[in-house]
Length: 143
Image 1 (cartoon, helix red, strand yellow):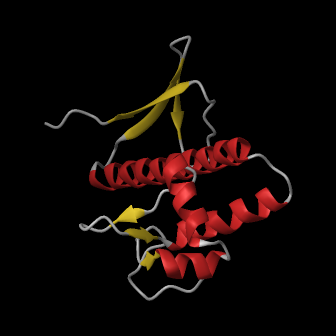
Image 2: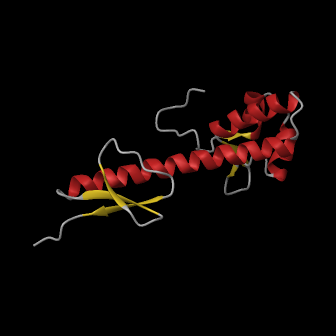
Image 3: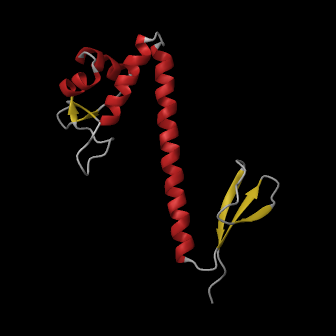
């Protein structure tokens, strides 16, 4: 779905009639999915539903999976996991950008990973960190 420039796929822009048409689902079905928490649109100040492009994609996926016989509870879990993965990816991108900024602003800084056992390794651009590690930015004292 092509969106106008400056509009995110998360922006609630479609009223229920447009979301219904775009998803191929009846407006009453969209209301039911909202009530049950399956696909929850944004709301205007007056309380009207406004669906984002991402909501429309989710509605299409719900319709497809439901037509294939997948129970709504399973679809809900799938959507929850997709949202969690998206949120975690956003957090990783944010942390990577923050780390990059810190490296740029602090010449001589080094990044270490510490494992559960307390061992530390210096990270460079290619070193992979095991899942159970804390990452620490160290910089030499100024002075």
